[in-house]
Length: 351
Ligand code: SAH
Picture (cartoon, rainbow, N blue to C red):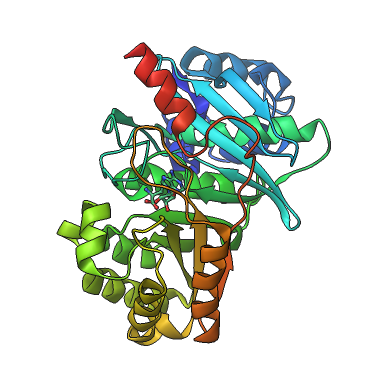
C-alpha cells in the first residue's frame, strides 16, 4: 500500500493509466485531496464505486500521527509528528499579520552539521518522503479549516536541508502550489538553504517563482567555515556567484538569513563586513534582504543570543548603508524549545 500523497500530479496520471483509469481522474482526485481535503476515497462522490475499489487496492489516504501539539499565546502552534518508523519531525504554524505560515521539515535530522544547530547533532537519518512533506501542510490546514482560515505561506525552514532532498522538494512545491488544491502561490513559498551551490543554480531554472533564502550567518569565509561545514565545500564567493545567477534568471529578491550569536558574528565590524560583502555582489547586492534572527539557545551548544540592544545596533549599520533588513521577532517563545529542539530531545531520549 502506498500513500496517495506520495504521488505528484504527473505520477498520479501515470498510475491511473496503469490501472486502466482515465487521466482526468487525477484532477478530480487532487481536488478531493487538497481542496475538499477528504479523508477517505468513499467521499470522492464523482468517482464510480468500481474506480474507488481499484484505488483502495493500491492506495491509502493516511495522515501524520500527532505526538504533541503546543499552542502559544501568539497563535503559534508547534506539532511534533511521529512517523511510521518511530522518527519525529517538527512543523510550526506561525500567525502573521499577512497570513498563516507553515514551517516545513524536509529531513529526519540533517547532515550539514552547522555548529549552532540542534538538528545536525544526530546527523541525517533519512529524507522525508513526498507524503511526509505534503501531510505537514495538510495537517495544519485541516486544523485551520475548523476556523475557516487557510495556510497562505510556506517556509521550508524546518529540520533538514531541503536541497539535500531536492527531487522530493520540487514535487512538494508543485503539489502545494497546485491551482485546484491548496493553491499556495509560488511567491508565498520560501525555500531556505545553507548554500549548496549546484542546487541553487538548478533551482534558478525551476519554472515556479519560489523565493530563496540563504543561511549566511557570517560575513567572511573564516568565520563561516567555523560555523557552517558546508562553507568548506562552497565558499562565499561561489555562493554569491550562484545567487547572482539565480537573481538574473528569476528576478526574485534573495533573502539572507543571519543568526546573531553573541561575541561571535554580531560586532559592528561584522555588520560592516556584511554590508561590504553584499554590496560587492553585483546583481544580488542591488536587490536583497537581510533577516536578522534571534538565536534560540541550544543546551548542548556554547552559543548565546545577542542582546536586543546589540541586535538593534547591528541592524542600524545595515540600515544606514541602505541594505534592507528586518530584525525578526521570535514566535512561540512561551512554548517549548524552538528550531528542531523538540525533535532532538525526543530522539535523544529514544536513541
Ligand atoms: N538547512 C536549511 C533550512 C533549515 S534551517 C538552511 O540552513 O537554511 C532554517 C534556519 O534556521 C537556518 O537559517 C538555520 O541556520 C537556522 N537555525 C538553526 N538553528 C537555529 C537556532 N538554534 N536558532 C535560530 N536559528 C537557527
